[in-house]
Length: 367
Image 1 (cartoon, rainbow, N blue to C red):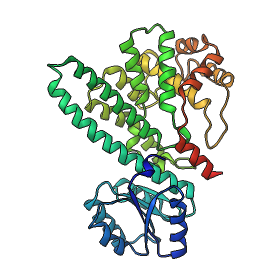
Image 2: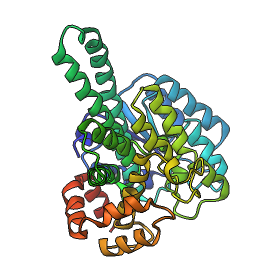
Image 3: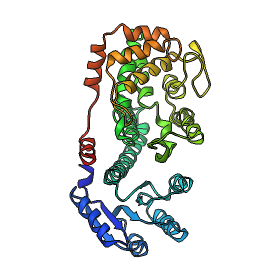
Image 4: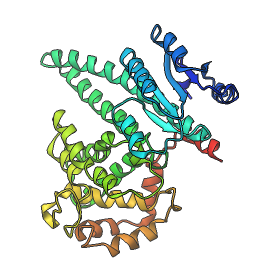
């Protein structure tokens, strides 16, 4: 609860005094400071004069034009202000448009306390990540100026770069409680597979680690309304999901990461038989790093709990992976995977996965 114990305040806006008080008491149970009001206009008068509030929780149905205009003004005045809308919006496209254009940051129903709590945590983590990123960027600029004279500072630059990647990976994983820790786990699996396949160079192995950590970076551009949708995706939503490898590759090109990192990000959904995406590549045309990662990704997915099923054991995972050898996976990578006992793979997972207190708290709330 470290982030939530800061001086950040939450503004609760709801015409219903009883609902407003209930939500306030719920949040105060987590040592959060709240302020209540019945109208957005009253809150706006305060918010436009002060930046002491981290986010607002606003219950509004229906969502009207003047309401949206007022939210735009608040965002313009304080771009870091998180806006969580508590509403039963029936028009899905309208809800997605509010998220995509940045009018609001989250939508959940007033009765979904777990969803409210998760959205608040996500906003605080996002603010903290922005603060850290600003610090790192300032440090990076200074180090770039000095690195020609000081080798030690050049090493510090690499450390900060790695920390930034770790922070970005953590922020991405935090968007989904069910898959938290996924990036770190598949990174370790990928490195172990690479070593079995004869890749011993430490720099090469570190590039594979970075690519695995950032494989889903493109999903930062995909709205939560699609990523967290509890039901099946429609055709249009699925096409948006399939854009994330190319979106992610575009992002990492801007920070000039090495080829192996980009290959994992761009090609990690390609399949050995050519039925994957985005380019339907076959066999050796898929870079080896991406072929390694594809198996590591599937291994973690099969052995992890999901909302729609319980986790499976490593014996089951082995059977599934062998069944898809030559179809989804490179047979050489499958052979490397099977050369290590399933007990050792389970131990690697156990030593790699860490469950943060935040998720323990959320799970308690949901019981």
